[in-house]
Length: 33
Image: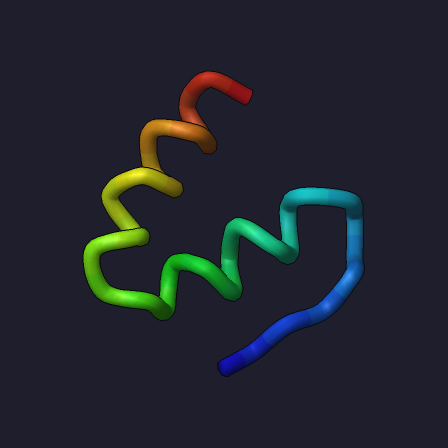
């Protein structure tokens, strides 16, 4: 699991994308950002 604090939530979203299922939720979050 990759977890880093870089550019605020940008890196967090990338690390979460690795997780199956959560990636869908993250995708929508990225668009709203």
